Image 1 (cartoon, helix red, strand yellow):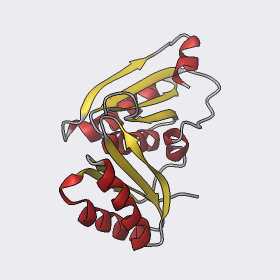
Image 2: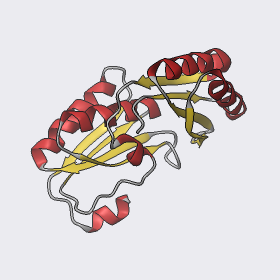
Image 3: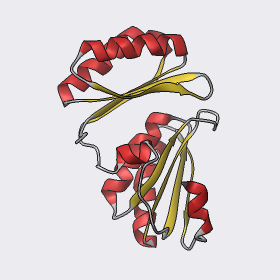
Image 4: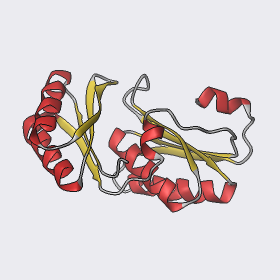
Length: 182
């Protein structure tokens, strides 16, 4: 089970690919994701034990240099986070819907993890900058009060650094909306 993740976001694809190689050679980590995102950025998501992830991310920061635009290390992620990033969450019923929108990918991941830890909600997806101009957004569902609480907690993690674009809670979305979210 994945417990610790690290992420680097770079504004150079070539440097991103090189940095990913350095990172996975630097420590005993597994590469979860290494790909381009809009607008011409590159993200690297790794997992491993805390020390290995910290070492790998440090190596990535050194290698990436001025091309690193954001980073994160989360040592105890919620079990729903990786399926939501991979768009493999199994959501059968859409209750209240929460949406948090961010300027940065790392901010969305941190917010999603904080939100799902704060309240009894289910992550639907953490969309990471593909086809949306480099933005990221998180969708989640649960009862109205839980969704409000989760969205408030998640949004506050990014509001402090100016990365929050917007947040909404839709108490009774139509069921057809779930199909467009999956």
